[in-house]
Length: 207
Length: 207
DNA sequence: CGTACTTTTGAATCGCATCAAATCTGGTGG
DNA sequence: CCACCAGATTTGATGCGATTCAAAAGTACG
Image 1 (cartoon, rainbow over the protein chains, first blue to last red):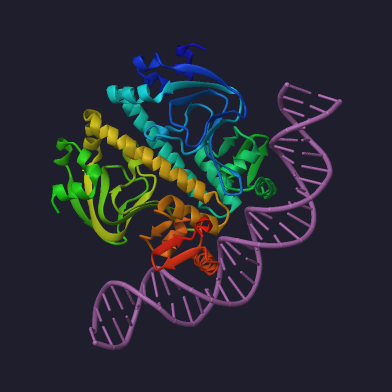
Image 2: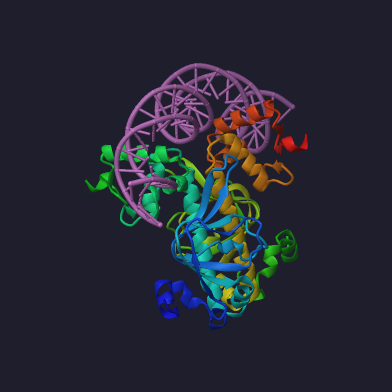
């Protein structure tokens, strides 16, 4: 895949200024591979081309908490102005990433105001996404979280899951058992239409 | 309070470029006042000088969900590049805000790269704060969320609450009853030291 | 074809939400 | 200055829903 097709597949790359491209490095990643660990010095900024990369922490019981899940686009954007990582960065699937050294990345942001403007928009989008996730996690029932997810992540009341139900459960702050049961219940009640990875909310208003 | 003392109290204001200052407007806010509503067009960017401003949404039961709580600094940063508000913005206490028109605010960001750089850092900080909140809300027990809050928001295992326990409970994604009970239990178990607004975690490692 | 992981269901338990009601508190106005 | 009021704090009782532990069945992948 050449640079042009990379940009086609990820428009945000179009804003990467010419000088920074010289430092771009392409790299394959393996499923389960840990790319960076908490407290590692931040040396590069990654953008996911294919596969899936996750930002994770662990709670005191050792359970994984997924803070970000990226299948396309930048990972750990907020690490740009800190010295060390605050989370582990792991590959969940095999795939490819593009890597820029942070030093040059920062320099390009200062030099190129268009790039900086894109980056800012990107950060604001991440802020909105995270607020939505906080809102969702503040809901007390599994069903509410499922519908909230469909409304905020789906299109026209339909989401195509790009992950397993088990990891979806973690993203929703539920155990996988609770999610399976809630999905079954909602399906039985006619509130959800479920076909494998496609989950559709049946709105009562449309009846 | 003049401009100099404003800047002293909020260093981020030091980065506001000269031309933008001309558009700054000072304004008093009353407790309970709704400053902006969901779907209102975004016309200004607020920075809180005193009092407290909150970004809130409501769930289907009408319960308030607090997405951001600001006693000093910018509110609703992510509204800069959207047309309308995605949350209500309300004053929780009487106080004062400084308001900049978004149009000029955006223009200044483009013109002044130092200002843009500060703004970016600010956004990244908000991203980290939100990730910490998501992590906290992913914890399943009240006690875990309390300790997580103390660790991430406190200093040396101590937090000084700048809000009521009731709103703290909402921030932790708990009912206020659950929070009161959890605090009592942890105090009884000798895991917390509580003096009014000061909550201290007793680390077992320090014994 | 075996192995690791996800999906699914079951049963028991526990913690939180919920509803209720009694103080306590800070602030307001008479 | 005191009575009053709204909201916060606190405690109690109850029920539900999610967690937890367990295990079976399904599925993808090498």
